[in-house]
Length: 199
Image (cartoon, rainbow, N blue to C red; front, side, top):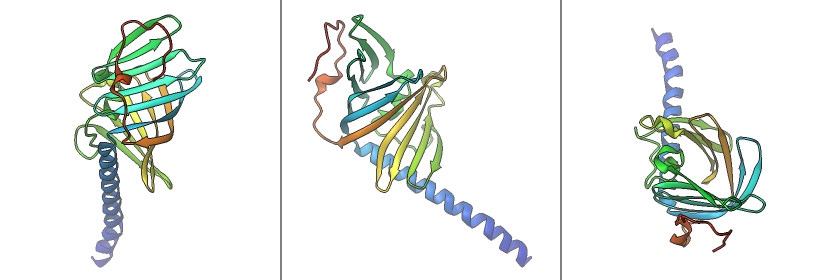
């Protein structure tokens, strides 16, 4: 009987410790994301076709993000809280998609909570980083987002979005500055795009 009890202890205690560590990490990540009211910096993108682009980004909760691509990529992507617009300078066009139907809505939530039941969560702990895979079970068209954080200290490093068709886009962040003033006009979606502009 004592041997059985000892065996169960050796199995259960590490499991409980692992669950506790996961809960603590997800709580810390949720707090970090909620406290990140604004952010700006540089990004490098690897698209589904393997093409590498880069540029500047800005983020403002809830629901707003801005990606301005460096030349020769003729794109700017803006989320204004309701829509995600892909603006193309070359052909002077804007394609719009509901933010709620993209995985960016998870990233841009007012108070992202990865500890509750809002999202379907898969958590990975590595030597120097955490990875959180999140999807909304109530929005199957949304796709998924995999967020990568350094773990000491916790800081967002990159993410991978996977759309409903299974196409993956990797965004890696650089020179990130948190909770800095970010102009609201960055997130204004224009009906006409005369040319590339800077702010």
